[in-house]
Image (tube, rainbow, N blue to C red; front, side, top):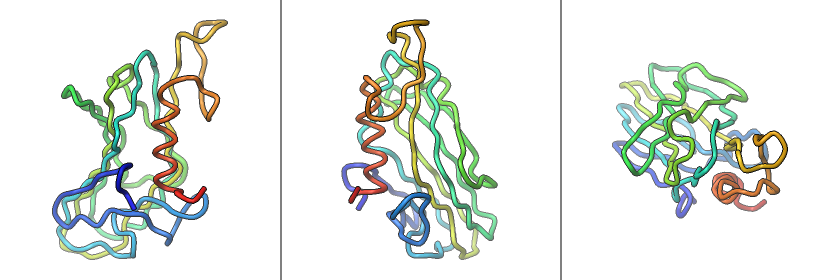
Length: 174
């Protein structure tokens, strides 16, 4: 279910689409899609292909999170480029509901991936569900003030295709 949109790996990797919770019908991305995660997990999931943020600035990622952790597990969200730079976006440890995180250094790069990393201790518990991931950037080439916030399918940028791939990976039938 993640093929072509997300790739995952690491110790105890269970990342996949889940129907146990979603912000908008019918699926979300979860560290343990069928319920509880295993003990001592060190896994990750990241976007494939990369987001092309060329020529764009002030990029941010909006997402909805359902945090069901009852243990000492740890999640973080990062953006990184194939050229080697990394931006820490958010610690998902206590987040709940609709959230936003700035891309910072990764804005303007043609090869940006999003990665969620999950670490758990010896406890077995339910984890985190992510849904409605949307990337938003300012395109200085827009007329008027030279800046504008673009979202949705009418946003004339390579980012639209990448955002659509992210959304489609979570809601493949829509």
